Image (cartoon, rainbow, N blue to C red):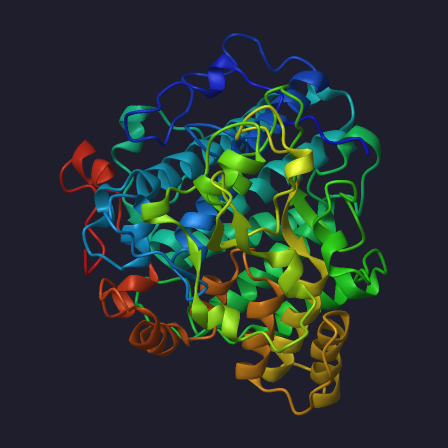
Length: 503
């Protein structure tokens, strides 16, 4: 299958200003005449996608592993030494504003947003050089889709953030305070609505992997669902907006497009030889083979000891800080659940011939498909798959949108049948969340599920009470729903930002 070659593209004008406020990746763009053809704009848009690839020691999906999955009840990683970012994040320590991952997520997203803003500014000034109005509109829609995508993650992670809709200089960035969450959402909604109305439903050839109108609707559905959740934190991502019908409409459009379907074989969804299958609504593209476009995120899951035996290169989580699957998650799977085999590595034989009790996520690793190093995995990362669409639609119904109890039951039972399990009836929100937890384990959705549904504090504190045998995890409060503003950002200009409560 041909892949979108977005991660091969690097531009010197996309890499400057990495250490200041990290809101401006480039200086004045356009003055050098770069945007002078359709090909230039295509490269620039591809450069925005490239923000999802490897940079600074990891790729974008790796942020989800550390900031979302490691935060949830799917992983228990208190750490013996407690020196790794995910250990402190797992433990809900209040001193994490100085963590590299917390800082990197802020920087990476704002650099990506400024790449998108640069494209949009240049389209407003120079779109005529493209010579095709429809193509110019598609470029605009792609840039807005990606800007909304990155801003949505920022809101979920940090709450209020600076709202920047055009290219700004470093000095100008130092005058932009954090905007209310509602204002950031206004831009996200506007951008995604433009994207869904102006992107194609699909692509072919080397353009596969670019954002589609249906991908925009999928992200927009997640936005509506998140906005609709109980507002536990005054600056958190949930606004109690009650937009479940609007989310349902987006999801219905995806379902009724007939472009997607559940695979019969759960493991085939994540096969290296079955990318772009009917489950994938949108994914991040990676290309292995030493061409500089591989992925890093699978490395975030597996143990270093396993890698020494089964991979041709070093990497993985050290023994004193492994991202160990929680007993709570493992015990939630009914006997005979076929997903277990495709989701977890529960033991392995080490280089001394001894069996090791491992317990790490194995969904994205295939030792036979390893690349040249730990940054060279070729498997695309699914952002949204069709099973998620179906279960989110069931969630909308349970939250008061159109649909019946039988619709909800059927969505959940379709997932359970594929897993080799019996049907259930009268599915409620708790049952749905538990099925989502098993279906998407290791896919970094659990934390968002708990926050969106307002169950995060009760679920996490109950989890800590039974799982935290090392007594390292702090009690979860509303403050933990979002992360702190990175300390480096607070230090750039005193008083520009205030720290989130609890940190």
